[in-house]
Amino acid sequence: MEIIYAYKQENLIYTGLYCPLILQISTSTILINEPERQQVFLQIISDQFSVRIISAIIPEAKTAVQIGKETNIPISTVYRRLQLLQENKMVKVSGGINKVGKFFVYQSKIREISTFFDGKSMRIYVTPNINFTIV
Image 1 (cartoon, rainbow, N blue to C red):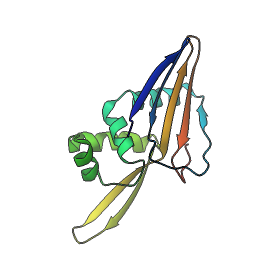
Image 2 (image 1 turned 135 degrees about the vertical axis):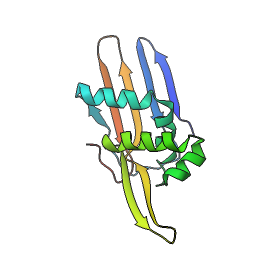
Image 3 (image 1 turned 45 degrees about the vertical axis):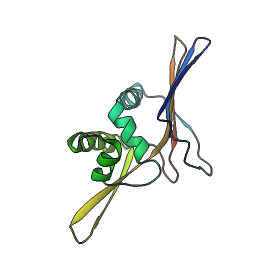
């Protein structure tokens, strides 16, 4: 799984988060226009822990413990980043009860984030994960 890509073409710099393992039926890419929302997306893709967490939960929902084990991120860090992602409506949280007790699973609402900067303006495009919308 490729986590981050970055390349330069002429005067444009392209960066993004991408998971090629997901087959999407039909999703529409959304342009993020609001400066505050752009800052949130830039913060998320510039944080290595957030990127690894999002990448882990694109294909399927997982518990925080599963995410921590799969990504080798300390569980306290996983919970802090999941809270940030949840506050910014980038993950879906579902819960249930089993023999051990309550549990929560997290799935990314985002499949891809792309940024474009040409020296004058910045554009951020977000492609939702299957069956999700970005608010």
